[in-house]
Image (cartoon, rainbow, N blue to C red):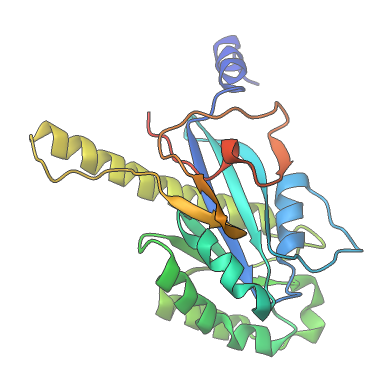
Length: 251
C-alpha cells in the first residue's frame, strides 16, 4: 500500500512528462511488429491485422526511477518498397526493437541487414533489442534460441523472445529497453553537468533536428527540450503530429 505522500506525488506527476523516448520497431513484413506494439501500448491483439503502410506511432507513459517517461514507439513498414520512407525516422531514435519471426528463418537471416541500416541511419548510442516474436508457436520453430542469442552477443544487442498473442515477455522487453535508454540519457546528462562544472567549452548538447515526414515539403522540427502532457491512462494511439514528435527533455 502506498502512503499518502506517495499517492500525492503520483497524482501530481500524472500530468507531467520528464522524458520522451523515441523507439523504432523494425524488421521484415509480417513478423508481428504492429502486434507487439499494440500489446505493449494497449494490451490488445488484433487478429485481423493488416500490413503497416509507411509509418505510424503509438505512445505509452510509464514511471521509471520516479521519472515520467513517454515511450513514443514508431511502427515502420517492413516491405522493401517502403524502406526509403522509413529511413528518415531512424534519426532521433534512442532505441530500436528489431523483430523477427521464430517460425520463419528468412526473417532472422535478414536481421543483419536491419542492423546495418540502423547503424547507418541512427545515432551510434542507440539501444537495440532483438526480439524473436511468435514464441507461442515453439512447435514450428525455425530459429533456435541459441542462434539468436549468439548473434545478439556478437552485435552487442539485447535479446528476448516474446509472444504478441499471449503477451509473454512483451512488457518486460519494452521496459528493459526503456531502462537502458534512461541509463544512456542519464549518463549523458551527468557528462554535461560535469563538463559545465569544470568550465569546459566542449560540452554535450542535446539538439533538435529536422526529419522528413512522407515528403520533402513536410518538414517538422523535433525538440530535445520540450515538456509534453499525457492522458491519465498513459496509453495513446497517435497520428503524425508536430506537438508529439520525438523529443528529449532533461530536467
